[in-house]
Every structure is written in C-alpha cells, then in structure tokens.
Image: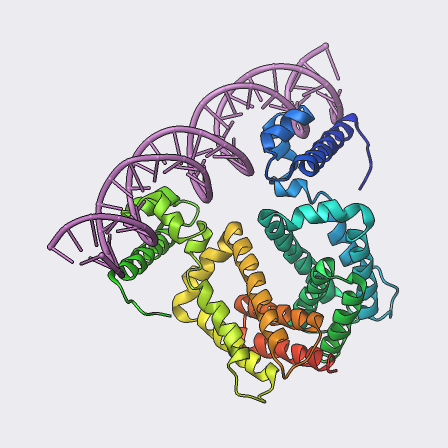
Length: 191
Length: 191
DNA sequence: TTGCGAAATCCTAACGGTTAGGCCTATCTT
DNA sequence: AAGATAGGCCTAACCGTTAGGATTTCGCAA
C-alpha cells in the first residue's frame, strides 16, 4: 500500500501532507471557523482546487487519519487469531483507539472538534461509515454465524462505545463499562 | 403547547407549514439537489431570509417533525406508568416510530433521504441529539438508578435500533431483534 | 381607538465552501 | 523521443447561509 514507486506518487503524497499539516496548524492557531479554505490553500502554496482534489471537504482536513481508524477496527476482527473470541478483541482495539484520541497531544484537536458543530457532525457521519465497515467484517467472519442484524447492531454499539468514551471524564472506564453491556448483548444473540 | 391564541402565532405557523409543504413537494418532484433554497422561497412566496427564520438549514426542511420524534421518545420514558419496566416501554415506542417512518406514504421521502449524502448526514446528527435527550431522561428516572454511562449507552443503542430498522428489509423484526440485545445489555448494568 | 413595542417579514449584499471547465506541465510508458 | 495521463492551476461561478437594516403586522394597554 505504502510503496513510493514513482516520483509522481511521492509528490502527490507530499502535497497532500503539506495541505493537511498547514490546515491543522492554522486551525489550531486561529480557530477552525476563522480559517477559510482560501487561507489554507494560500499558506500551503497550492490552488483551492488542489485542496479539494485531495480532501473531499473542509472538515476532512481535520480527520486525515480516517482510513487508518477504519482499518484498525476491521483488522481487529479479521486478523485476530482463529478461535479467539470476538468481544475481547474488539474491546481491546476500541480501548487502544480511545487512548490514542485522548492522549496528551490530542487535547487541542479534540477541543477544536467539540467546539465546532460542523466537525462534530462530520465525525459522527464518519463513525457511521466505520460502523458499516465493521458490520461487514463481522458478517464475513465464518466463526461467528450471527444474523446480519446482530452484526450491524454490535458494530454500531462498538462505535457508540468509542464515541461515548472520547467525551467521558474517565474514557477507559467508560469503554470497559459499555463493553460489559455489549458482551451481554452479543451473547444474547447466540444461535 | 398547540394553542393558537393569537393571529400572529397562527400566521407564523401557517407560513412555516407552507414553506415545509412547498419544499417537500418540490424536492419530491424535481429532486433534493435540483431544488435550491431560492426556488423554495419563490414558490412559497416568501423571502429567503424567512425560510431560514423558520428552518435552520435546507436539510431541516425535510425533517420537519424532528421535535415530535424527540418528545415521543423521551415521553415514552418519563410518562410511563410507575414501576413499569423501562425496556418494554422503549421497545414499544421505537416500534411505533419505525412503523411511522416505514409506512406506505413515507417511501418516497425515505428514498430521497437515502439518495442524498447531506440528508443522511443530517439525519444521523439529529439522531444523536435525540439520543442525548433520551439519555437525560433515563438519568433523571429515579427508579432506574444506573450510571450515566449506562444511560447514555442505552440511549444510543435504542437510537441505533431505530436507524437500523428504518433501513432493514423487515423493520419490525429488526427492532425486536435489536431490543433483545438491548435488554440483555441493560440488565448487565443492574446495580 | 389609538399609539407603541415587539415580532415577523423583507431586501440587498455579501461570505465561504464547493465545483465546472479548460489549460499547462511534469511524469510515466512505450 | 512522443504520446498519454495525472496532478496541478486559474477563473468564474453556484448555492447555502448570514448580516444589516428597513418595513409591515399584530398584540396590548392607555
């Protein structure tokens, strides 16, 4: 995936990164709403159209790692050792993701997101996509054999756990508590 | 609540309704994206600013009953007979709401929503607000005495049930199945 | 009834995210 | 080396949304 085979791809990746870095820096310094796309483009020394060639929207500039997040979630399910029970694996990964997003350095970004309705809304719809990807991974696991509905519900519950924990006073304890609920819910769907 | 005491309030409500009706009619006839706010305003014979005086955004025109939905949910909790268990009451109300939104006449609207990313995203963020309101209602119930986390998680799970059911092949069965999971999750949080 | 304050509506102009269309140039392929 | 393609640029516009301020309409009390 990360093969910088040609110069073209390397340059493209560099441009993308420069835009994302510039945007985040400006957003944190002056506030998300106070910085326009035109500002970001100027500071990154690219055209406005180039920004949108790399990012689908202004909000997407803030959630650059979107893809990683989704991959980590689904891989926690698909790449786990055979016969390892689902819920603990999911629990562990969500816990790790929550730690990542409540880490020291992430606080200003988190504050910025919570301070902007547009960013909150975007994050939520992102989470929904992640839940759908996770539901697909669950449905594809031959060891689980649960209904599509059970998979979809469990996927959403797991995402709920993440979302609640990121905003909770004690994130890790929140993940644990919600996953106790998810475990019971999951077991109630046993065939 | 619905007391049309004065002419002013009646006229305001009428204007609001005329805008909402006009908007929905145009959206269904020509497509959500193909109709601009300026079109809606012109057809409803009001100024653009008046549209935004009644609705916070273009998407909000489609979800006119937003408030009702939230009230029905929270009241299913707060207004239930004393000592009636929570989960069945919630289950019943969500079932009713799902029936409402999968009813015969709602199909074209549903199709329109699913066809527009902006509307899907808006609906999702609306649901989130409803979940928060429901969480508050749960936390306020003296008979329940669960942690704030358990209340928030259960509220989101219930909203998940609604969202999943609205898009499922068999909506009612989906509500039942997800509520079996929610019941187990809720009971796992008993003090 | 009249007159006043508040609420609802209007108009205009703009702002800011986003996109279309067309062009240019660096890179890749053969 | 030549053509094909992708990344980037510029300009101009579209559309949702808002600010600012004028104007009308209604409710209420003198």
